[in-house]
Length: 262
Ligand code: SF4
Image (cartoon, rainbow, N blue to C red; front, side, top):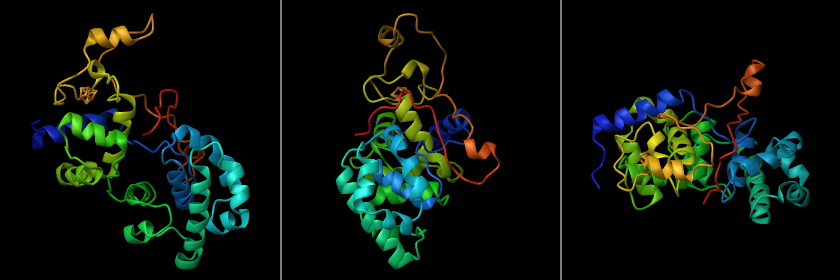
């Protein structure tokens, strides 16, 4: 497959940026520690499922010290609806202990230190660096891996290869939000089974040779579904705390069509 040209890559991002000027994570959190916890919990689980469990958890354990005080068994009770909850609980306790012992209870703004924490890999570190600290990192999950390869934006055989390709081709002005634009595009438009190609804002740039046609899309829709021009996923409702004028980042995007992560 021929990769997108430099001009096409810029246009690709320009259109995604136009669709969602300030994209944000779907995970709910209130500080870097709760973001880290939410990302660890989201491995092989949906953001929706994680968000159902975390508000009650964060109300009593929003710091590493409080998480340690809660204890593993009581943590398990609060996250048992999330897949792999026992392993995740064990990792979260060890992670909290490491943060208290090595980082004064703070989440480090450092990739190496983050990846040294129990249960934290490169993808989780990239999400935390990007979302909590504003670093221009691009975490590659299943959606981004698919979009990057299908479209010709940044083809690669492994998530690491795609991450390196994205870092190389993404214009500096778009790096801060590239992760969010690509993940939301993959989640809501460029879906795994039947992408919404006739509604896609980058369809004319995309190299995918098995695009969904208008007839297929219409046939797949429930009776009475509306026809529409090129669109992206709906913009998120305003941040509840932002509405109250705080600097916090508890976010909630549309959830109804969120697929399960792989
Ligand atoms: S045209 Fe289809 S395959 Fe290409 S990016 Fe858009 S939704 Fe994905």
